[in-house]
Image (cartoon, rainbow, N blue to C red; front, side, top):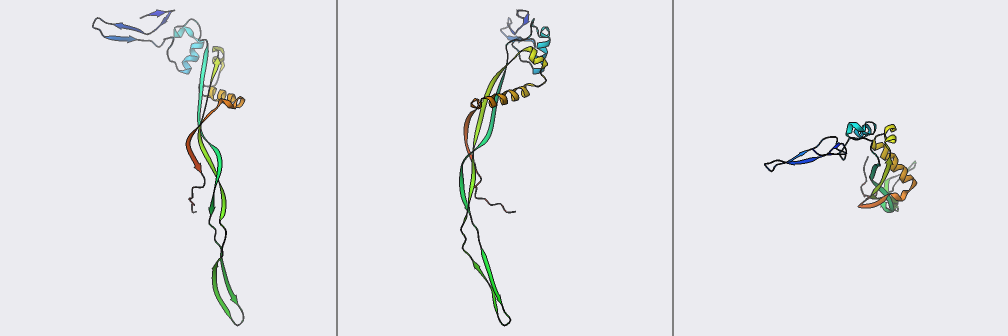
Length: 177
């Protein structure tokens, strides 16, 4: 295996039979760690084959949210009806019950409409090992807080792209109870 600056790195060995073999260790300086392991590497760099804690720490946070934005309202009409019944009574005569349809205008309603959009924002947050060691939040919580704060300070950080889908509450379907 090859050693560089006291760190074990991946090494390739070709045997006499022409077979390619790869050896690696978990202490690879450019290797992947869990966040818990990274926190530990800040506190115990020698356990990870390093002489000093990590530096130039950058958390990359990307937020992709699908949401609906209101657009111009549509409209539709709903049918209404009116039925009038009459019947007359007296001490001598009776006029039988009659029913009449009475013309009524249609009821005009406004229908909210929405366009589906994807809102994307991304930021990089610089940290030090000292900050990582005292942090009680995980990476998800760190990024949620950082993205929300960045968007509240600069709403232009959010890139909005329509998906092409729309929704109208005037679907023409009347649900019966």
